[in-house]
Image (cartoon, rainbow, N blue to C red; front, side, top):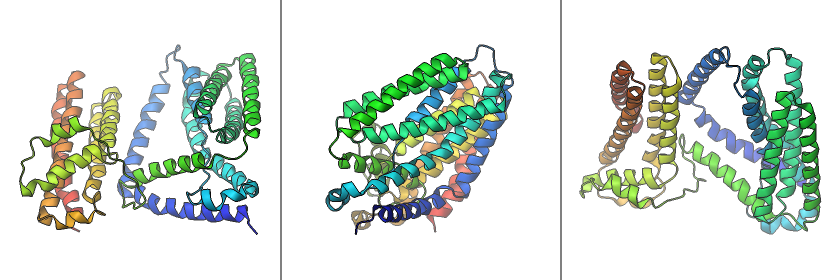
Length: 405
């Protein structure tokens, strides 16, 4: 007899083993140290900033927007697989326990994000409203959890709808209502908060009514959404370990490829120089990761007042960029054609070291120029010198050591 409850337990056990296997690589020593430093520095400056909070700061709007997005984004992890469309779809009427467990699991894995964000906004909330007690903020947390459950159920019901436009409109309406509810709640406008809550309740009932009219689940959409979330996790894990399940998307980006490959000589020893450059631009998320790290690091350099902390953050994000781009070396490991290239193995290592030097120096120059815009000329000299020195030492010490193993 088919037991959907046991099936979900098996799927969940397999899923947790899969996640745990890659999390060991993601949370390795290097990443843990970088995250600890980043969180400590942010906490220090955040605490100092809230003590000087201006009277007209839009606290209720910011918290309302963040909390509204937090409760609206409520994906359901069904853990369905492609063969289920053939082998389990016929037993859909017996899958009630399975999907109930999926919703419960989805709530609890999103709970830690809620607690972290609510804790992070605590100092800002009490700095803006010093007359309020901790109990009031605790009630706000309870309201967040209630609306999280409501949005999770509404999202699950709307996943049954096949019309994508209907689903998008529903999410947009709920997002606006959630933002309004938490804005009024934090601002102390309880009457307006109650009115928007009633409107949200009507939308909630509408979603339930619409889902009941659907003949069956949209299995294809459920499986597609679950695969997208797993692929996002695999892309993150691929920066730290080999991920055979990763489906890499290749993009043309012809103008950018031409820009970075035009000066590569057409010589045998330059084969991997050319390959790594087009891989960086076209494959996976290398260039996206590189640009994001530059932007985030640049924001820290611009907004942090202390010169030495600016330099530390510059080095930190330079380290993260070089460390992440090391994954280029194993990107083509499953392609056997590279083994027949008439190119020595040392040229492959040299090409990787070369592109890492180039990326590191470009990032160093960008970070250094940001000091010039701030008219911190000493910072420009120190950032340029320390960035070049760190790039040289890290690549020659750590990177070359890893490649030789």
